[in-house]
Image (cartoon, rainbow, N blue to C red; front, side, top):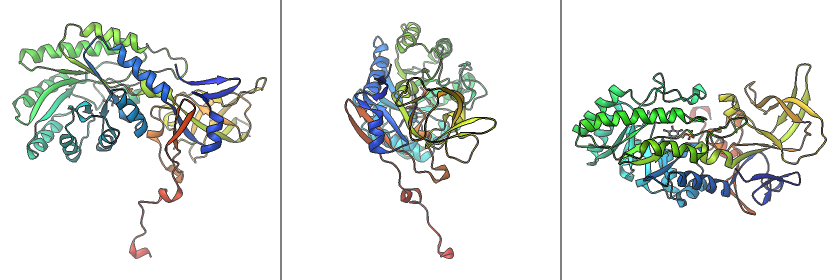
Length: 419
Ligand SMILES: *Cc1c(COP(=O)(O)O)cnc(C)c1O
């Protein structure tokens, strides 16, 4: 459920017509709904109410400070994957003791920053990283709290680019190497074993891979227990899918029930790292139709947003519903590609899509773009990135302004010898 609904043929974001916001901020822009974000967080968090747990929102899904602050106020922690995300999370007021740090390529500098901040734990993904972390912790006279990320070799049955828990993926450690990592960590005075971690992929629409991964983690924990290695935090990552088109992912309650059932005999605090499921359907991308063009082979609707603003269709061949912001009944239907202005054939939002015959000047909403939308945007083709707008009831707030041309070249310099 989300708060982008039609009323009398007009798309509303909560209590505001999307058309009205577009008139004020221009297009394209991202639009997020406060009520939807809150609702999604609460449903997810309450679903695990029966267990000691901590929701660490996966910052990379949508890292706008306003979104992070909203989740912080709901009691969320953060799952971060870079020093930049640590900076954002702290700036937004997420307490460091609720931050976990994931990712295969943490640099010594990022480790130092996170150790100084006092985060909850590092989800370590290789033996080399473990050694580096111990060295950095020693240099600061600190003890680094660690979990080892297990690669459980479970097929999440999702897009290959967002599968992370298969043996051939770069993420986590196989069980034998992970076991070695735990023994090494136990011996190191600058490391403290605190948890175990796994994250098998994104946009999962079935529960069974999560349960299978959890069973493998549990079996592995038994082995650790035999070595007197105690696990206090069991981090199951994120990955629960959402509805973009005709998917039928389990609701958070069902997902939680299956996990709680597996965990009830364990004395651990469960950590969850949801991203997409919290923010995906809480955002839309609003764009204006520039031109309609017919060629002998195809019809094209050309819009003012491009793959630089929303990469998912080009990158993952992702489906996003596209709807006119104002509906006109009885318009003929066309089958067309919805494309952006960028000089790439991959610059499309939909291909061979059934749409009403839309007119230049009219607004379209690209639905379910709250996750992996703005965060993956770029300045390709020297296009200023679009603003992000947050609606709350009948008010809206520009939470990131549109980039200017000056901002595009702000870090650049023509060297002396060319002057
Ligand atoms: C991306 C990521 C997540 C969030 O994934 P979603 O599919 O958005 O829920 C959680 N944990 C880790 C380690 C990730 O890399």
